[in-house]
Image (cartoon, rainbow, N blue to C red):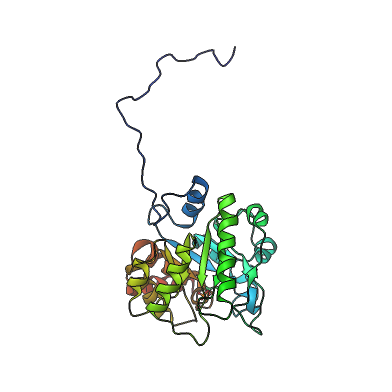
Length: 294
Ligand code: 5RP
């Protein structure tokens, strides 16, 4: 029989070497199942423990946002520099090449437009479709203190339950209403609630005072949204401060795709997130990259 031919008798059992059981590199995730961990490891780089997520899901409630009018023209060139793409299934299927190897975080909640009460969301993606699209996580908006607070929290817990059946993590996005105070006390409440109720990681906003207290009392990783467009040095400074104060990465949209040079900006953000580069050095990189292409 062919499979017995040439069998070697000198098997090695390495009885003197215990099998290593390494700790998983993502905060609070050690007890998750293999599929969950593997998907999270596609988001959070195992070497740096951090992630640069490129967020361009804004159209799900505000239509063709500035910089996203033609995702095929403005976003595709940025994909090689992102660890993860955060987007809707509509843009994923219509524009993103299936040959892309970046992990996908799928926008999984929606409903109201900017013309209505934004907190009145529902779950907007079937778990089967998330599996079909090979999503590494599903993102859901949570409006703590908003008009539909409870409904949005239940959206999140339902996604956590559905995702757990299939090994797909849930990203809770803490959304802040126009009239709500954005301070560390609020974000400690919002992020901790999401983590306690099962979110695997959380997206929130950076605050100048006490951001380290937000990250320290949240038992799972926190990534920051970029928020409205700022001058590039300020955006790099914000990303740097967040990383130094315990953030596990960024989920940045407008401050990248609305930058003067989005391709240079995402590389500068990467330097801050993955290489702990200072904001000044990252901005030098930004200008150098722009000059190289001029
Ligand atoms: C929409 C989102 C966006 O993905 C998020 O706001 C990130 O984009 P930006 O950096 O432009 O704020 O979650 O609610």
